[in-house]
Length: 151
Image 1 (spheres, rainbow, N blue to C red):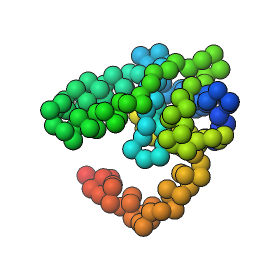
Image 2 (cartoon, rainbow, N blue to C red):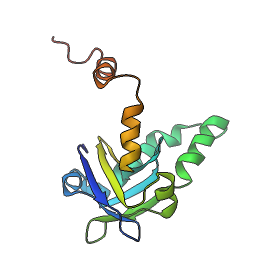
Image 3 (spheres, rainbow, N blue to C red):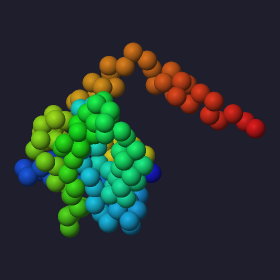
């Protein structure tokens, strides 16, 4: 499970180091390889290869390619997707199109998001948190409703 947040720099070639605290959660089956694609917001998703295969087999392959909305999602989800393997310095190369999509220039906020990693422009992430009309406590109460009941 990927957890935590880290601020790193992007080098001139678009490479970002993946923190050791996140790398330790990579399954050997991922072979230090990720699929990068645009997130559902202004950020980049990094899926370890083992989870990507599971996601595509279980979710994407079950979508109806003759349903216009489902096919639109498939196209949008996959159009910028690229595969990359960590280099000897544990960096991943992020294509320029994805960096532009996420508004990333020199610095990134790397977030563990359970089964994937998100890469954000720190300022965009800060605004994202500030834009919510609902507090963290209210979100937690709603999302976790029914969880944690004693038996």
